[in-house]
Image (cartoon, rainbow, N blue to C red):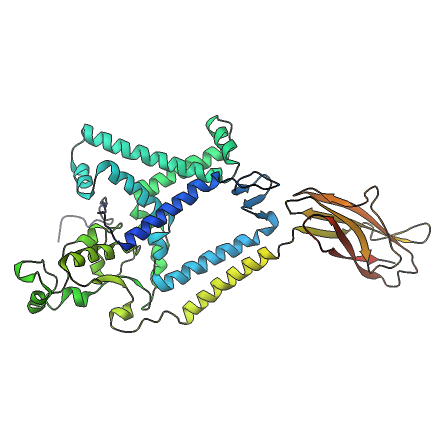
Length: 468
């Protein structure tokens, strides 16, 4: 029995991926540039609107409104957020059923920021070999300068990431000035430096460990991936042959020579392992840590192209396809996810297109329910609330419908005039003779007839008149 204890936790090894060119690397880079462009530039895009700050995307918590270009989201529209979260979830499930963890490999914030941090590291410290050598060498002036420079730029990028997030929640020019003059709220500083710390830790120090040990998605992905899901896969039948892998020695440099020797097309160069951002060997089969970014495919294709052999030793393939079967993309599960995605999109579009820019409610004052006046008429009182959610002035004439013999009294108010984003609360008295009140409860409507604004059709508000 060994005297040395068995380690419970594997020794942490810093992964320095090698650079590679190819179609999947190009797609990752384009996604990275677009994501950074949108995230960092969007708070500074001007957008002219009659009400609110002239900022394209602005989450105004003080006014409890989200401004997204021409769309204004009010607090009452919070169900849109639920629908959006549901859409994001089912879209993630749908894409996973078809192409595995493609979201992780190309669109996840952790992947995008880690890619950017590694690009900075490469720019300052050099390629993979130089970075590994720098880590192993003793601390000297060169190592101190390169390490400090790398971490300083990482911290700056992490800081600007946190600050950019905060700029979405206020008018960016004013908020930026207030931030650097010490006049911003404590929440702004807490959020900025909190996100700065987490970004620096996750993308600069933890990197692939977030995907392996923190993110729950890597754990339950195996439940969502089946034999028809496309994932980066090594073809062992072609790569191993009957005798396994072999270096391209003198007699094994051609396809013909390798077939005669019984070895596969894999030349055991290890490039697929060197480019992997999480440090796994795709030739060992599917592993939970794989983010399925496709860089191993680019690496293998590079070697195959250099030797003049067919590509596809490592490729996006399903388990059924790898076993020479047929890949079934469309089946009950994918149909279900697809219908859920379409349903969520349709609901959002329908609810947004049918959003009322003028909302009105009438609440009866029930203390008392009614008053019998000295002349015998019955008096009911109502609180009429009108909310102008449009970006323009609006005015309305108020009348009654389906309440014969009734007289309406709004005091000194003759009509309703609302500025953009303004609400009004009006006490309305309705009197009606006892002779006209033949039933205890009579349904009727307040009619708001527009005289100015975007709304052209009358607005009907249901209510009831109560009699003895």
